[in-house]
Length: 170
Image 1 (cartoon, rainbow, N blue to C red):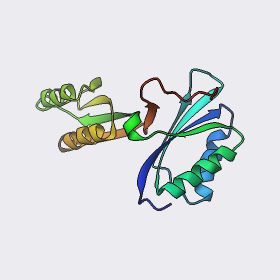
Image 2: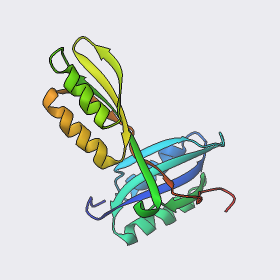
Image 3: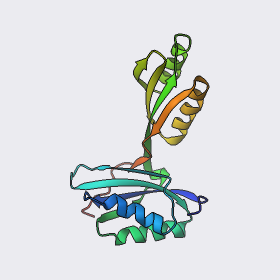
Image 4: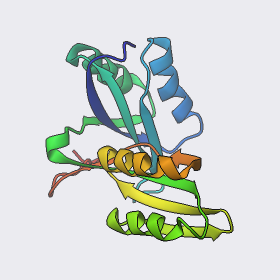
């Protein structure tokens, strides 16, 4: 898929069955669409998982993706989550080079971002941060001068704001 175009966040309720992730990812691959981000986890119902997929494309391409997802046997529901009516979050773990000289300034930045130091070693600290993508990107950029040893991100996850929800009863 062309990486140009608007970012779309797609929430997909699926039956928690072996191979469902492969089938969804395969649908994207077969049609030449790329996935910017994908997170999957059980819902309040253990038999149902929720996938949050971030893809880019024009409205026609994204609508085609929705139609193809709806055809998959394990897919229960597909919903778009626009930014103005949704909450987006991502988790990042960052292992940063640290020593006695810079540990306090790293801790100060961690506090400003409401992040948490979750591990301390002689030559590093590991930080956990949750937020939207701009917040995480800003934090990563501020940590780069100290030296990032490792970084891992969960990918975007999202819910609709307010009382709206994606239920299987709709």
